[in-house]
Length: 456
Image 1 (cartoon, rainbow, N blue to C red):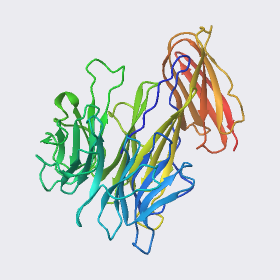
Image 2: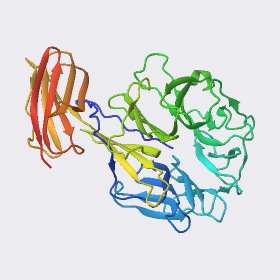
Image 3: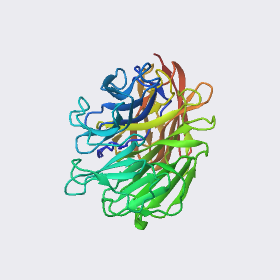
Image 4: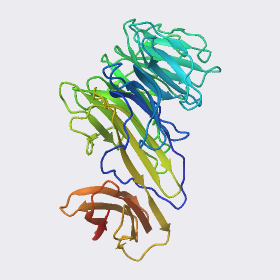
């Protein structure tokens, strides 16, 4: 999986995350018995999904699907037995592991946004699979890695020729995920732990501290305001609910336990949302259930210290098998789009759910008001957005929250220390039901509420 980052926009606008209200199923469902992988292209925001078949060849076909309208409709770009993984390569091309049975499974490249896929760059024999794909853009000629049941395969000439690159990795290691950091260090998540190569895959060294199967890895780069000594981390998710981490200063070779979500859940996806406007990050994890446990989505906003399950809107015991997202930014707002895919192993079992977070707080001016104020929202009634304006006369820790009429908190609009000034927050209520809501401003010793009427 690859992850989308956003651009800087500062000046008079200060953005605060409006917490999302729940997941909603997309209007359309890509064909397949279940989602195996998914990615949003940064260049055009098109959503690509890889699916597996059900009751092949008589039921739903697997393959590569594309939506250019946020999941409302889907194009079947290629019907096959299974499309196993798909990435946005960062070189302007898409790469996917596809099994067009009865032909062998292979890695394919699309240079035209998924319309065509050409001949395979490499195939693996019957009994083998390609679980993961990664590119090393730091090499003079692009290096491509394929993670298989028998270790990594590597091409050092942009996919023209291939050879095993498993020196130091046990032969029985399935490479479930493979990633390359910004300095060209390659990490392989395997059924025998994590292996690191500092020489583009010539030699691998096994990391200490873990022996479990690691299924997903991602490099977590420090923010610009991190404390001195902040460094890149490599996060890994296991098949028994463990989130582990290693630091670049140890070349990612020493792992410690970061969190234990649930031993009966397998990591299905990890996505880091980098918000440069706020200079903060949000972490998301999708888990696939085992032993009749509940799968679903977890998120963390404190650097992975604590995790909260956020399954509102998902079906009961969701079989979440993939996770991706995107960030769309304008000058006045930022929208975070998160997507989870399900693997329900049935016809129509590749359902997609989306969750939106709208980020928008405008600092109107730097003048110091003479008192705390919370004005009536406008428009009111509203559908689905409204503005909430407030003023603070001095530096204060500000909390602006929204509650339903029963007193249940439905959104945290602002929760941070702010300078004196007048602010305008945009509240997005697309996932809330019609009715009365209460907005509450708490700053210093000041507390005030207003009623808001949502009509859909």
